[in-house]
Image (cartoon, rainbow, N blue to C red; front, side, top):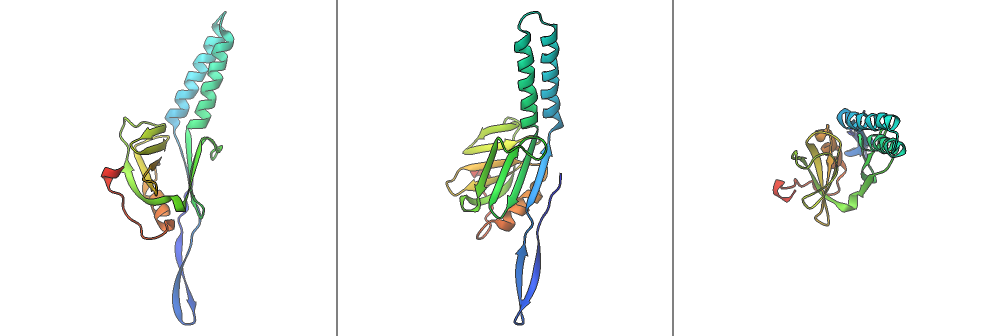
Length: 181
């Protein structure tokens, strides 16, 4: 997992200092060992039951394959912030692209650091006034859309993600009231 954050550079044009922002994309993958382990243990259990069972062998083996696939899909979340917008995608090895969500800068009104409750859980969840992608922990960044809907992205780097979003967010950054989330 790696993260990159941009730094401002100054250029001098006809004797006037001009600030320009050369921003490298921010990308970070958070992996949940707990989720991957849980899905894998469940898959192994179903495989063992499949090999021990005289009947329903195929059902147990297929169930094990489904749990293995779910573990590979939902045990890692990759977030990318670039010139096009913010994207979040599930999957190991940098994300396979599904399930995924991409928001362009024109759709994002503001952002703020938030903390999810234990009730909101992990995975893809409906939250008050929107959706959440999360693989582990309680920290998140809430993107408030122009429509008023909210998209929360769980992360183990909330400050770095928020800084990357704020650096590219058009207009003046406005903090979101906690009550609106």
